[in-house]
Image 1: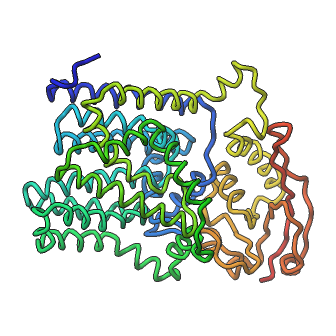
Image 2 (image 1 turned 180 degrees about the vertical axis):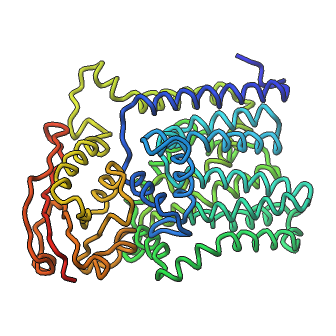
Amino acid sequence: MPNFKSMSEPRAYFGLFLLIAGLTVYRALVLATAGIGLYVDEAYYWGWAQALDWGYYSKPPMIAALIAFTTSLCGNGVFCVKAGALLVYPITTWLVFRLGQVLFDARVGLWAATLFLLMPGVALSNLIISTDVLLLLFWAWGMLALILALQTNAWKHWLMLGLACGLGLLSKYTMALFAPSLLLALLLVPAWRVQLLNPRLWLAAGLALLILAPNIVWNAQHGWPTFQHTAEISNLEHAGLHWDELGEFLSGQLAVFGPISLMLWLVALFKLPASKQKNLLAAFSLLFLLAISAQALLGRANANWAAPAFVAASVMLAAWGAQHRRWLIAAILLNVIIMLGAYHYTQGAQWFGVEMTGKTDPFKRVRGWDQLAEQYAARQALAPQAFLMSGDRDLIAQLGYHLRLHPEQIVSWNAGQGIRHQYDLMHPLGQPHIGHDMLMVTNEPLPEALTSRFNAVETLEPLHVQIHQDWDLKYTVYWMKGFRG
């Protein structure tokens, strides 16, 4: 084992390069050979990337821009749609390394980078293109810019802070928690409180809001759908004390950061000697985690919503663990085992003779959509000019991706339920479709309110893909002729 206690910066940089390069190549190989398709949200975001805009129903625009970039480089295959995560996480890991290096030293930076890149949440996220990929990048960049700005008061670092926060807000709105984290960090360190009167800080805040402004304008033009969706998924209309939701969220953090890592971070919070570095890292980890915990208690919160907290937590744990390397090594080894188990679950199940069923296959929801799309294409041959129509967001997203449909070729049927998703918002059945045919794909009976608006309706051969004995995809297809409005 290398002696990290006396690690030189060149040696740390070399270790960082091996860590990033080795894991990125390995994860690229896993992604290329796993044979796992797109999750529904990934297919949904791919559709957004076909019509770039300043906003979408449920998210700001950066995820669509990233997918548009990667698919422009190598096509629309599954690997290329997901490739943004493989491109972004090496940069984020380097930023985490720099955080540890600037706040402490190079060996802490390397430990922090290792903890971050191997935490189970990041290991899984490397194979899935999601808004967290960019959020973590800009959160780490914002933290580094803030630290450098506090050290130098240089314009370039304050402007970099504003740029990082603005782009983070265009990635995921939870980037807004950066502001109270920053405020808490400044209040916790007496020497930094004067920065609250620093005009450069407020100009950085203004720059961040200026970058976000086009998305705000887009939301205003479309009836504030993104903010409405954010409120809906938070479940605040059923506000109360949901202790079960809080317990589920907190237990989920064991899976995000790693069981031993999370326990050791709590130890580090108490054992790491008091310093301005510790106060800053505590502000940028605890406040975020407490805020999302409160959200879980009052409504609901997914485990991954608190992921940015573990950027600072990785550095704090590394600073404490650099003097307790056995514990750090145990945490990292457990995370490696979890990663290998997740990446090679299917092979392992085959090796141990586990039958794949709806209960034992964690990837069942991404299987079979390519076959279903092939069956739909055969029905489409009967009505080549017909639009794909459905009221099911997941179905539209998956068929839209596998058939490579532009969003303008898709129609959403909504029986007066309010705006539910991007297809309802931008492509509802309406005036532009008068005179056109539709291929309605559904697993529910057709309502009279819909059939009465067409000249004729013909039932086609259903779509059916048997994935496991107890899990299948099954939909009815209706050829709806001559929309009357």
